Image (cartoon, rainbow, N blue to C red; front, side):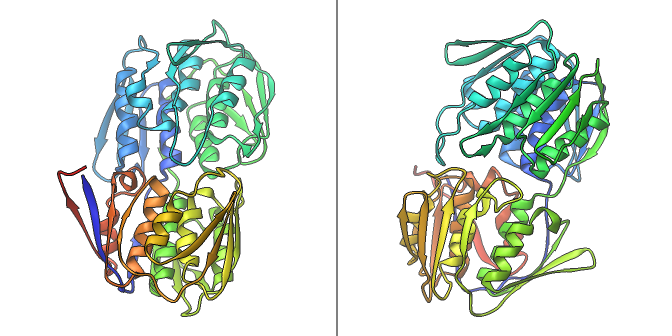
Length: 424
């Protein structure tokens, strides 16, 4: 099992190229199930989650071919299989986004229930309710959701949940509605850039979607979708993580292929902390003051502060001069990194969906355990600045969402190595 060894205290300086967005490319790949003709995707990151989706699509009859430079070509060759089984879905919850495309194109989708998750409960009841509103019959068979529909029809439906709009649920319903008869209107649709990018891809294939990027999305069904070429948007979560890497090490990083308009809430909080974030030509330059100010942070649906950067900013605030309050409004149980950051000398106290962060003068290296993708990133950030050596175990989590992060950090001055052990 791989782990990272990090010698802290190195200031990061240099240029980082931001990759294509994981959370955009996965539903776009799933949408290729509905396309007649070849699809060419550019900016596809080499991630474990992308490979898992590729494997699932291969099982569902979609041929995939990777080419240098982040290019992937996809084409449907067999439409017989409609079953996304447990073995793959359990590895990656985003596998459920094949549900809408399978139902829309093949009129049947059998998808394993995704089960539990280290960051808390994430039910798919809104996905199922939305697809049922389009005319799908729903059943539960041996732990699988089974949806069937001879014909889907447009409908007006509401996709808001107790913690805001459902991103993957919006994607599933939007994709299925592309091939439904009539017009579908989704109220309380997710507004994330990744949903807007999916809609842009579908429109390039011949779909008729308007309002994407707003809470009200309208989809007029078409008879078929063709192929297209599409470049995936930059990963705003990766960009935010590298911004905080530059800040926590008191360094200076220049980010290329970074869209600040997707990160306004993050930039607002970073500037309040004392981090300089400026655009220079085609780059975003991030540098930090020596004194970090404490701030309050609340994760919210887009365009609010993203839950996927909550752990990383908590690591940064661990070194602020005063007390900060971090509140999680999307996944209230997403705090498994708190105990591990405390092992590095942070002073964090969890109170319900809130963590009180008492800033300390320094962090100290220790052995820590990654529990999920974004918690892994937070522990790496803390290790970059901690005195001495930090060992981050179970880094297979971070490989799901960051391509070769240790090589990219080394390229800008970090002292970090990937090592392996046969021990569990």
